[in-house]
Length: 222
Image 1 (cartoon, rainbow, N blue to C red):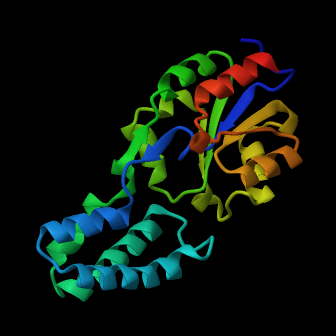
Image 2 (cartoon, rainbow, N blue to C red; image 1 turned 90 degrees about the horizontal axis):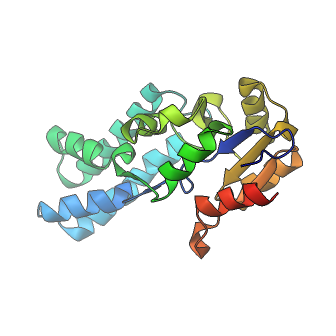
């Protein structure tokens, strides 16, 4: 594989690029509560009330910075759900917290490891993801950390893509200039920001069948 001019670093988004989420937390909560015999109407009301907690914590970039913040958010979230359907059942709160925890729902795309194995031999690989602190754990659970020199999570930086500030923070952390990097993301707006900063961006449109192998092929032909 021939490197593209001086571009020796690839910055990867995580979710939607390296792995996907098998089931979302509300669908898991709904399934578990139904299986335990709780009424669907009450479950729907409980999930709506959980949105109140989500709105408090998730609408400001600096509200969830650390794992401690994330844990507080999720604890309050599941406490609100349990208050609505079975007040005082702390065991149920803890069960929902654990069973619906995002990190355990991540699943690698079929080609991820093979492509990373090859790219690692030619490029410095970095992750830049809009996520809370626990996403970092997925790189250990899925055994991906060994491929990346840096895993940068937006919550720690108190800003998120497509904010140019997060890309600038990333470049500073990895000690690179934009023209030395490539970027791959499943969201067009993030790719556009990267391009504006001189980072060569690639939109991975998995909805239309694109995979990391297409990205790898593009690298060979630029």
